[in-house]
Length: 128
Image (cartoon, rainbow, N blue to C red; front, side, top):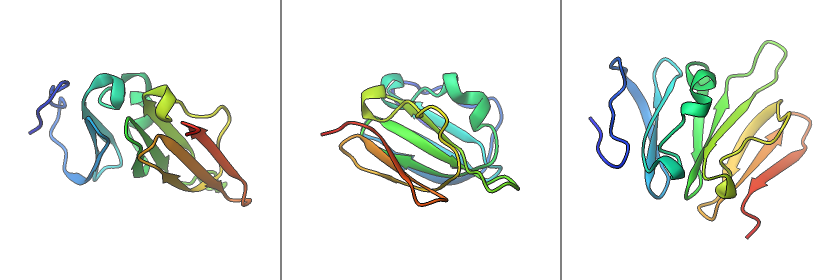
């Protein structure tokens, strides 16, 4: 059960593993590795543009004040992918070609930092 600005329930009931919060939206990581979100559609409550990528293999979700980033399972080649959604000024747009991610860090101020397998750090979102 959910409520708020974007309160439509998913078509099928799924078991939730964990819920993550931005300032005005929530994202639920389901036991099957899929994601469901609700709340302000401009601040992470609407993931329709990335829904296909968030149907499976999500291991963890990170949040800024107005965006989310999902870390997907590594493939046999070891390349973890990330999928971001929400306010683009707060990190809601995934950097082009970002793969091989080992971990993601987030700030409430609107920035994400991804640590890649080779040790490179890629940042996006608010520079403040």
